[in-house]
Amino acid sequence: MALPPLSPAQLAKPRRFELRVSLIFAALFIPQGVHLPYFPLWLESKGLDAEHIAIVLSAPMFLRVFTTPLITALADRAKDRASVLVAMVAMSLILSIGYFFTSSFTAILIVSLLLSIVWTPHSTLADSLALSGVRRFGSNYAHMRIWGSAAFLAANFFGGVAISLATESSVPAMISAGLVGTLAACLLAPRLGKPRRASPLSASAMQKADPSLFTPYFLLCVVGAGLINSSHGFMYGFASIYWKSIGIDGGVVGLLWTASVVAEVGIFMAFTRVFGRTPSSILLGLAGLGAIVRWVAYPLVWPSGAGVAGFFAVQGLHAVSTGLILLGVQKLIAETIDEDKMGAAQGVAFFASGLFMALVTLASGAVYENMGANGFYVMAAVALVGVALIACAGRQPQSAG
Image (cartoon, rainbow, N blue to C red; front, top):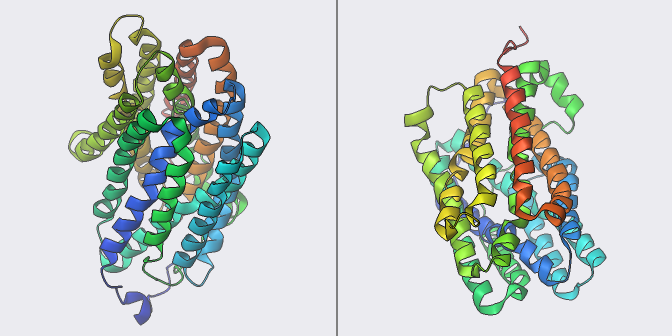
């Protein structure tokens, strides 16, 4: 179905569009760059054990798999998506203040569940604004999005420094302060009106729109990629706690997280030149193999005497285990799905990745409680299953027809 033509109002480019969207991306990723590596440390400082930490981290993941597609689809039907983004950020800021008044497991879990509903859609809504600018005005998405990666790096590093100076108690304050900056940036968001076509609200609507989304080849690749990506759940939940337990300083922990993002950005920059002609299924398989090597190496670094330098080397594999997954899934969609169905395909990939990440993160608490760093071997097994599914996909036809 062809898209309706753009109206004169939609063709009018807002002033300094790229600058305003770049500012939004930078602001969005500051609180995220604090939350991902350091929120588990704050949970531990509140007296939560590994299993309770896993529940607090995973329960919002289960919830957002269902709520985020619904909110973003409803945003497509609003008068302007920028207004929805502002409302989501404002509610996130208000809810984040709840962490200042909670200390019990139940209270922290409730705040985290409510916060995930309104916080998770931030990036998706910002992406939709940026991509509308790409289509309507010829804006360069990468040039805008890169400021989000830069801000995430800075938050990783300076968050670690702050923790080393002020302990883990500073984490909620840094998250709320970051959301204050995000709200200020989003108030400047360009107004673009409604998109020309709204997103489907359900999996049944997506399937009706394009049955090719549910071919064995596409599903095996997406599920395999989701499993490989989910094997990172143990690291996201407990790597900072593990590093702290063996005496690594908070500032160095921040540098370790920063190194992984730098490696990921590096693979983005080299991707077209190195992997531009590589089939997506090969890319996903390479990502899985990189993840297996990474998880097998993790428990061996400290006992072998490789020290912090060894952890930096292992963190460099983030370029393969995560970077190639992100790029491989996008290449998979581009190779197998018609352009007007790509939004629905993204929804299927988001569901698979989010569901498996939630399941693995939930299980990670018991794994860390009983196995410590050896739990990375379990993650290697998870990634191996993902590689096996992708290998099976290679034997399937790539389209329904």
